[in-house]
Length: 478
Ligand SMILES: *[C@@H]1O[C@H](CO)[C@@H](O)[C@H](O)[C@H]1NC(C)=O
Ligand SMILES: *[C@@H]1O[C@H](CO)[C@@H](O)[C@H](O)[C@H]1NC(C)=O
Ligand SMILES: *[C@@H]1O[C@H](CO)[C@@H](O)[C@H](O)[C@H]1NC(C)=O
Ligand SMILES: *[C@@H]1O[C@H](CO)[C@@H](O)[C@H](O)[C@H]1NC(C)=O
Ligand SMILES: *[C@@H]1O[C@H](CO)[C@@H](O)[C@H](O)[C@H]1NC(C)=O
Ligand SMILES: *[C@@H]1O[C@H](CO)[C@@H](O)[C@H](O)[C@H]1NC(C)=O
Image (cartoon, rainbow, N blue to C red):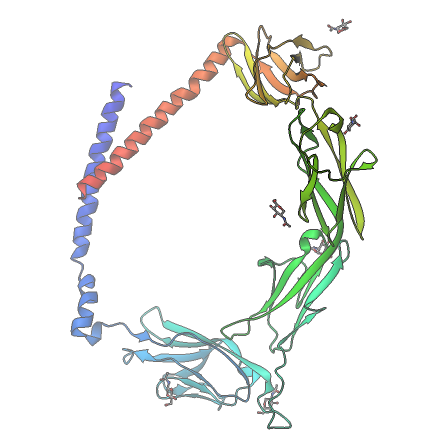
């Protein structure tokens, strides 16, 4: 490291020390601040003039029927010297004990509770505010009132309670079955007045699209649209109203396969998997060519659950190799997928490419359950027709995993592509996906390698500086 860098570091540390000290003495000064003592003394001495007023009541939600009486509390503490107001939607109802509203069903009680007698829907509001006009920032609590249109009086007969009518009616019903591709309309109708916004959820996730008033519309229903829908209506009471609709989407089978090719070897266990989605559940069968594959004790097992279907060949023999098809069928349709069970080496996957002094080293990984007999590495400049063929040496694999490494020498600058094939007793594998790379001059390459490591050491230096500043701060403030 350059000696000047050390000097710089030392200066930074010195400056940090001074700064840390000064910030500490600031704290000490703050401790002398009289306001801190006040907080502590308040409880002991109860000096009224220094106490700030408070509202002890909590905000509330009141949901009542037409004709009821409501009490909105607003209990005050240490507020004698301040004006207190009641407002509804910014309109003054009371200014201290002076009545501002013309409505004679609204009365302020001596303990500052606001009484609303014989409440009607027009008394509903989310903004009943009680405030202490204290300095520039009033202290306020807000109550919510919701008055249902329907009266509390039961017409007749007065002795039997009316059957509790649900406040929300859902359409088309608690459970809806729909076919994929159809449209669906869900409704949450309510007789609550004034009408409120309805919030919709699908599997607990909010739904905003295609919601109009109390209805949710889903065009061209998909498999993933199935599940639990909830509509939620805020009434102003503590708990919002919630209803639930369960949507069942029927759809023809859809099959996922983990891979199109399954590589195996003689004597080993082979396992083919089809993942089937369908509603109602699909019947699934396995075919090899035109022939259905059936379980055979000690040789072939067919297992799984409603989604995952597995065909297992316990000891694979040559005649087991070939193409297998899983076919899934329900009353809405049919689907099938084919998987090739093969003894060939798998398609190689590139795992590294590195430019060195001698040339470009390329690395691939592949699997084969039989010994590899030969590799073929082909590369060409982009746009050329002919491949250059190379023969990487065959090395022993680890179990069924093989690594191929080969160096391409004497590349001219330009853009290239390379593929690899492997061969075992069963034949040649599929070619790997082409790997593209750029041939470069050695000098340029060397430059490129040097630059990043240099900047990394600079990062390290600044990290060290930061750490020293922080730790020196920690020590000086002890
Ligand atoms: C306020 O006073 C009324 C009538 O005296 C009483 O019913 C009510 O409980 C009081 N409310 C509170 C919050 O103290
Ligand atoms: C509420 O009740 C009063 C009588 O207490 C009645 O006159 C009024 O029509 C009712 N309002 C509604 C919306 O039902
Ligand atoms: C919403 O409606 C539009 C047209 O009505 C439709 O194209 C769209 O797919 C709908 N969105 C959803 C989520 O159903
Ligand atoms: C089927 O089995 C797999 C694993 O064996 C499991 O992950 C999956 O949840 C199961 N599916 C059902 C529908 O039981
Ligand atoms: C299996 O299917 C593949 C195409 O997916 C085909 O190239 C191959 O010839 C088939 N093998 C047999 C034995 O039918
Ligand atoms: C490509 O290969 C063919 C046949 O192997 C040969 O006739 C032709 O000259 C080659 N082309 C080039 C550009 O090397």
